[in-house]
Amino acid sequence: MKRLFLYRLAVVAGAIALLEIFCLTGVIDKITMQPPHLIARDLYRLLASGRMNGAIWKTSTNTLLALVLALGVGVVAAALLHRLRALRDTLDPLFATYYAVPVFAFYPFFIVVFGLGDLPQILIAFMLGVVAMIVNTLNGLDRVPPVLLKTGRIMRLTPIDTALRLTLPAAGPYILTGVKLAVAYAFIGIIGSEFILSRGGIGYEINFAYNNFDNATMYPLIVLILLASIAINTVLTRWEKTLLARRGAR
Image (cartoon, rainbow, N blue to C red; front, side):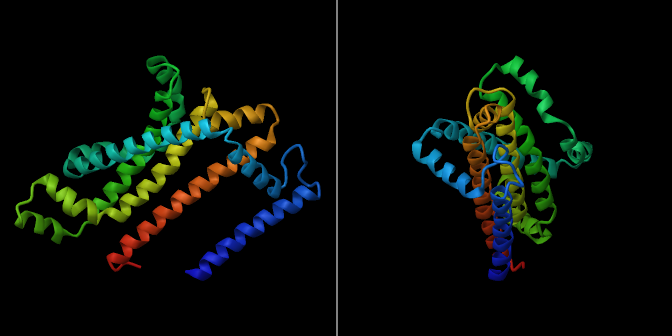
């Protein structure tokens, strides 16, 4: 595992070094992109100044709200669909083709209905994340050992108690896979919506910087999003491996 981590680190470091060389030698024009070491410097200055605190707070809050909605609705809906086989068979084709639908096409409709606030952005992010949660939770519930269900019947547990104490914990690793996807989709939904029509947030600031050729703001914010996504995904991956280790899985 340590060797694998070093390999990954070497690949990332090599990519950054190559990009640094391209920028310093003029292969990548200075107007297009500054070298990575300057991006790191600009990111530090941006965070230290506090100028983007409001945008970071807005994007983080909306992303968290969308994620909580996607997780809650996704798990509950999956638990119900797992018991209602006919309804699940009806909706399975929709789940299989869901991400072929351009969810952002609903943004004008949400603006007309809900106005120019944060709610349309949260709904877009929710729509992107909830199906990933449903599909992966169903995948986990399908793999729950039958002996657990038999144990629940012997102990005369109610369907809710069976779900909370047996099936959902057993499906934990698969649910965490859905959480990782939902986190990514929530970020995409919020930041993408801020690009389209918003007066605040990291997506708006990146779009504003791009239109004004402000690379000292645009690239550091992009790197900030990447670092946040990697950090969250790393924590969830470690948690997933811990759950699998407790079950004796490799």
